[in-house]
Image (cartoon, rainbow, N blue to C red; front, side):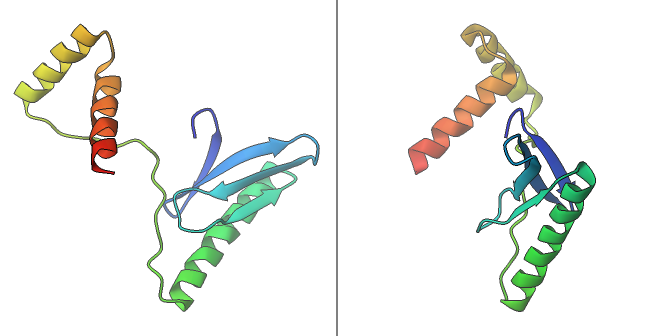
Length: 115
């Protein structure tokens, strides 16, 4: 979702884009099972449509006994021991990357190995 504008409501994230051809803002709720879209001709309309979409999704989940999925922003805090933090900093510096990029690559490598 980098470079995209987002809306948040009740812990849900909506991605937002603009269609010049149609003259509308549109988006979808991110990180849920299923596709829930919304649109509006102004930021106010779009925000209202997004709130309605989230509320409708929650009602749908409740009526169908489905556990609603929360959106994830992609940003999280991970705690390490000072020793591990230091090792990561040294290894990241040796690799010529940021600590964030180093950890991201390590986690993605682990996920790929387990998939």
